Image (cartoon, rainbow, N blue to C red):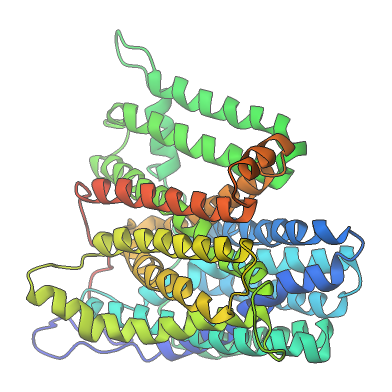
Length: 520
């Protein structure tokens, strides 16, 4: 790509190689959402038939959210490999091949529990491994001369994701009903193979940012120095706090039989990151002198970003349940015989494709005319709040159904519309925010941390589901005259609204930066 050394003298050029990345993403998203959106109904109707009928929906929700946890946990591995060993391009290519194998395993083993779960594991590994890299690879194609075009590309990127998701959500439930699991899971496998080929075709035109060499001033090394350093006449409270977090995480494995080992591992990670990050913040100034000031300041910037990410986790708790809790709710609603409950999920990407241009062309300019700048953090605050409102609407529908009334599935349009508006404000904005705030040497890892927030969001869902299986707790809910399903919906709504309040308060003090590579 020819660099422009004087942006004022010539118009900024749009990176032509973006078309391969966006084409890859459109096919990959069809593949992913095609299998993801039929996973819960397939589990309930086919794979989990060995369970009592009343236990199948709960078990299907657990499998679904464990799968999503894996999808958004493995970005840590993919980000580290890309940043330290292979670079983004080769990491995406190799993980995509694993992804293809996993998709075809799903199609081949629709009647085999072990084979199907192996396929799910490979899809989680492959999809998760490339997830932080494709969007940051888009950012690598820009520099200071054309960075203002990046927002448009990220919006187009997100629009393409939802274009693939829309058709997958509409067609795959129908394919599952008409042709069975082998065909319904096989089509996403073919699309993933096409996605991999498209990405490979553009290999000679990409800007390749090489892996960073071993860095003595990396985030981990600076954090280690801060925690272990001694100050004359002072104790090490930050180190103590980090150790407490580690011990609490390990202690959580005692509850693994009740919450599951995947949940126990995630809980341990939450404690380690939360307490370790707080401890590092407390003692970070002790790393100065051992490391350059810019490295220490970079770690503090990363810790600020991680707080933002942590406060988005309740949003992901709500958002991902549209493919589990809301599908199960739709199953009890009045609908045409030809319509499958999972097809309601097509409404989400359709609304995204409409809302992104509406926000950019109508809403944001209107807000600016009234003197209100819709910054990234303001958009995210509003989005989290709208997700909470959407679940209040879903909870009201559940109360209506619990009262014995026949409720049309068209009423679900309201919570879907509210949740999707929140998604556009949080998710599309978060991709741009994460890349712009990340130090140059840590973009892959920071994007991984953004996706780890989704893992933690799904962890909250698993813990909530485990808690309502307690007979005493369930009886207490029902004694209040409300169903467990409705209670959980209002609980998650409150969870998100509190998070939106905290996010907004923190955003007021967050120092924004721009970390795009220099032009030239």
